[in-house]
Amino acid sequence: MTHLMTPDEFEAALRQIGATRYHSLHPFHKRLHGGQCTKTQVKAWALNRYYYQSSIPIKDAVVLSRFRERDIRLEWRHRIEDHDGHLGSEGGIERWLKLTDGLGFERSYVESCEGVLPATRFAVDAYVNFVGVKTPLEAIASSLTELFAPGLHEQRISGMLEHYDFINPDVMTYFQRRLEQAPRDANFALAYVKEHAQTPKEQRAVMGALTFKCDVLWAQLDALSSAYVEPGRIPPGAWTPDS
Image (cartoon, rainbow, N blue to C red; front, side, top):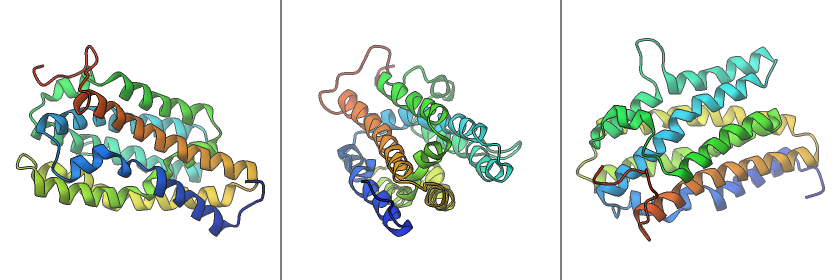
């Protein structure tokens, strides 16, 4: 890409990345939503995903620190509050812990992150590092996967409630809440990158950031599949059904 795309062309290019690379396409998600996972595999997914969820407000605090513009910090700050909650009210992390509670994990074990797969940890830590070392434009662009999240959440809610007798609506509140939050966040990020990516180089950087984030999400599911589906090789120290 050597020419400056129009805003509509640029948005179409970003959406095409999601259409071809978003982790909704991963075989593990198809198993999860289609009722083909064992309870052990669902538990492994929820445990490992907690490391990602609990790292999001850390990532967002790093993004916030990249901007001197007060209006951007004010806009971005609610993302941290969405996950951490407020005094006396729960946020997304607490809602995720309700899921792991419902699956039978000790909360202290989940919060310790001791059983997380090494590849999960590496991928998530790479994401936190990315938003700190890349340009502020790329830091915001990496969140654009939220454009594609609501459809995935809808599939997850309906599929898991339909197929797993150990899942009930009370433990799925994280996804129900994100149906409202993700579009709001995605719309801000999309408008920001369309306005501020003013050269072909900057547009390529935005597309690269979104691609990187898709890779981060995909890598986590690859790790889960390798450890808990096929070939079932669980790394030393990671959670096992007997631990």
